[in-house]
Image 1: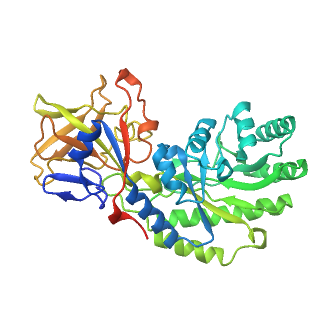
Image 2: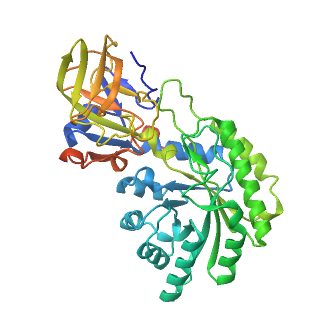
Image 3: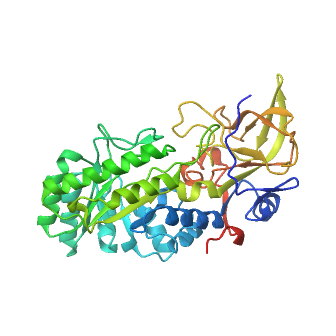
Length: 415
C-alpha cells in the first residue's frame, strides 16, 4: 500500500459528498460532465490575501500564467495581483482576451521568435531577455517599428533554490544570461536608448523549505545589487522569482509563509543603496492556484486482475500528467485523491485508480487505501489547479480536453 498526499483543508465533506466551493462534487459533474476541473475562486482570493498579509507591503505580486491560463481564472486574478508573467505570444493573447492591459505583463522564456518579440514591443510588454542575442534582436525590431522596447535581463544566477523541485539557476542553463555577463549587457541596453526595466532572477520552483526560500531571496538581492553596481546603472525593477511550493505528497509540510515574510521584511529594512527605490516583485504560479483546483473523473469500470483492484476512470494522464507521476517526478508518489461520492466511508481496500489510455503510465493513484468504489462513483484528484489541463497531452489517443469551470464560495472570500 502507498499513502496518498494530504487533501487541502478547504475541501470539506457533507455526508458522502465532497464539497467544492460549497456544492457537492456530484452536482458539478452533473452540470458539466466528466472529466472536469473545478477551480474554487474563493480559495484563490484567500491565498492572495494570505500573501498580502505575510509579505512586506512593498512587494508586488505577479501571477505566472503558465501555471493555469484558464480565461475566467485570469480575469479573477486581474483584480487581485499587480501583474502577470507570460512565456509566449499565445499567453499574451490570452491576457488581451480578458481585457488585461499588456503593460502589466513581463515576457520571459528562451527561444522567443521575432514575431513574438515584435508583438510584445507593440503591446508595451516588458521583455525579459534570455541572451545578448535576444537583446540585439529586440533592439532591431523596435527600431524597425519605430518603437522603444521595454527590456529587462533574465539572469542565470550562480546559485539555485536549495531543495526546489525544479532548478532554474546555477550551472549551465538555457534560461537567462549568465550572471557574469549581465553588467555589460545592462550597459548595452541603457546606452541603446531602450527603456531599461531591470532584472529577473529565478532560481527554482516548488520549494517547501522556508529557510531555503529565505536564503535564496537574500542571495538574489545581494546578486542584483552587485550586478547593477558593476554595471554602473540604476535598477528600476527586480523580479525575485518565486519558488513557493505546495504540499502534494505524503509527508509534505506547507511552506511557512510567515517566516518567509518576516525574513524578507527584515532584509528590505536594510537594503544596499543600489536597491533603494527598486520595485520588487515576487512571481508565483502554483502557489496561487494549485490548491484551489480539483480534477473529477468518473469510475467507468471496477476491475480485478490477479488479486489487484483497478478503478478505471474516464480521466487520466492526458489531463493530469503530473498526478500520474510523468511530469518530472523521479519516484512516483500519490497525489491527494479521494472517492468524492464516498467521503463518509472508511478505507477498506487497496486499489489503483487508472485512466482510459492504453499505457501503464496512466495511473492516478497507485495501491492506495480507499473506500470500496464502483461504476458511477467520482474520483477527486486535489492540487489540480496548476499544471493540469494545459500541461498535459490532452490530444493523446483522441479523448479530448477536460471541461473547466471557475466556482466561487463566499465563505472563502477575503474582505
